Length: 196
Image (cartoon, rainbow, N blue to C red; front, side, top):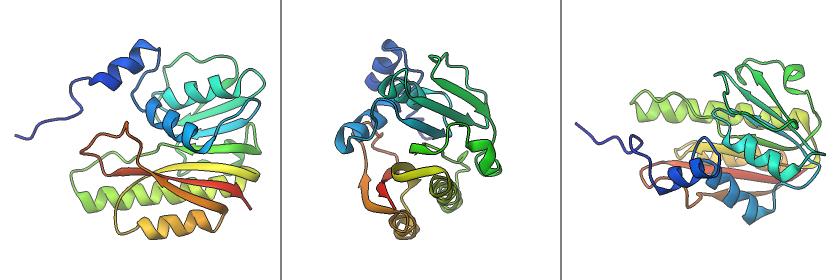
C-alpha cells in the first residue's frame, strides 16, 4: 500500500493553520505574489476554485478594504472572510460569465482549480488542462487591460499548449513551481502579466 503524503500535516500546513489559513496553499500564492508583485491595494480579484479559502483570505489582506475578492467554488467554502470578500457557490466550468462578473472587470484572476484525481495520470492531466484553459478563457473575458492571471496546471504534454493560451492573452508569461509545492506533486503555475 502506497503512503499518502497528504495524510499528516507538514510544517507548512501547521504554519498556515497557526496564522489562520485553512490550507498550506497560501504559501504558494504568497511566493508567487512576492516574485511577480501580483496583488496591490484596491484591486478586484476573482478566485476560481477557492475552497477551502486560503488564497481568497490572502488576496483580501493584500487588496485591503478598498479592494474586492469574489471567491467561487463548487464546494461550500466554510472559511470566515473579511467584508471585502464575497463567496459564490458554482462550477467555473459551467457558470455563465455574468455570474463570474460581480466585481468585474478584475485586476487579477486566480485559479487553483484541480480535478478530483482518479488515479489515472493521463485522465487527471487532461482534466487539469481543461480547467486551466477554462480559467484562461474566463480571465480573458472579465479582466482589465494590463491585468494578471495565475493558473495551476498538472505538468503534462499539454504544457506548451497551456503556455501558448496564456501568451495569446498576456504580454508576459512565467512558469513558477513554488517552494511550498510538495515534492511528489506535478503541479506548477503559469502566470500571465500585462493583459492585452
